[in-house]
Image (tube, helix red, strand yellow):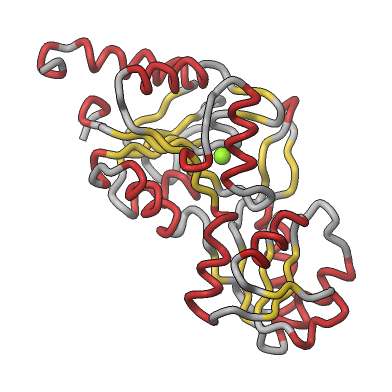
Length: 269
Ligand SMILES: [Mg+2]
């Protein structure tokens, strides 16, 4: 596989399209060029704070017009994962108010923290108000038999000025350690989100590129479902442990390579 055989693109968001409140260099231009050339694209995010609608609004605000169906977020898949395994249940939602609302809209019943004994499931997303009380309730519930779901296991996510926030994975690991139980993970690198992206694009997996900055989630997961993987590596840090099909320093470089591939004679049929 080469870049010029790719027919559809899935882009990670955090660290790929944006970092904190800013688009990364070349993002708006590459997305606009792919759209002008009628290449289907989708944003495939491990986000555990917000769902596709809020992420699409943020993309639009930053200069990449997007609607809800242009975005697939792990946030939106977790309620279905719980439902597929357990049906509609009483649960503890450790995360943003948006996460609890989404679980409730999908038919689950989020409980107050002090009623952890009644929980049939615990769902952990990124939770800016995470504290000892939430950790205690979640880990006790899981240790007592509630099924443990994590939206993703990302250790960090990039924010402005080269800094990071602790990711959903950092909080889920705290619960896992105290409960002595590993979570069921919904987001990348697990296949559910990639398969949803491929289905949305309408291309075969091997004609679809996964573009992302995280080797452990975007590249490992994309490879495992047969996608063409493009690693955005702004600061080369030696040989990666997982080989992407292509590594680029920026989306400006990816744009240039994509245009170059299209300009060759056998790619213009
Ligand atoms: Mg990322």
